[in-house]
Length: 160
Image 1 (tube, rainbow, N blue to C red):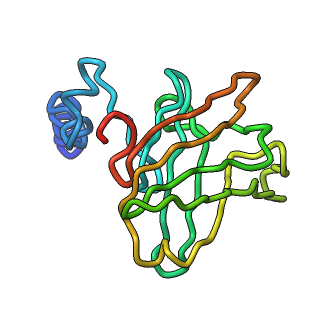
Image 2: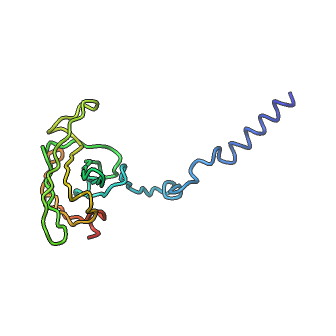
Image 3: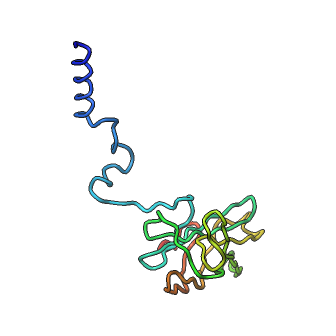
């Protein structure tokens, strides 16, 4: 019986103290007052497409690959696009390079060209260049066309 009382007291103490310290880590204060920080899930560069969507650009310097993930406004959910490709005009040291990111099919998620959230391209100059000014020419998402979206890589939109 004494053991049961000790366990009840320990449990009550645990519950009154907030349990396992949930909500005390980084961002907990913002979460409690309703502030949400949008963080690119792959650690890439967010490019805002209006108020409702983003494309996260991720560069792999080893392969020279640039991936573009179409995401919702909070960068939490993948959003499929009907675009077969995305063209980006990149200005590097005063020269314009054209990047065409092709739609990537994924059998595991049922995504296909013309109905996918992932676009990719490869260019050897991306192996050594991690900074450029870009203009996303056009992408269609759920019936809305976004065109001539200016950004800086790796800063994103609004920080050119």
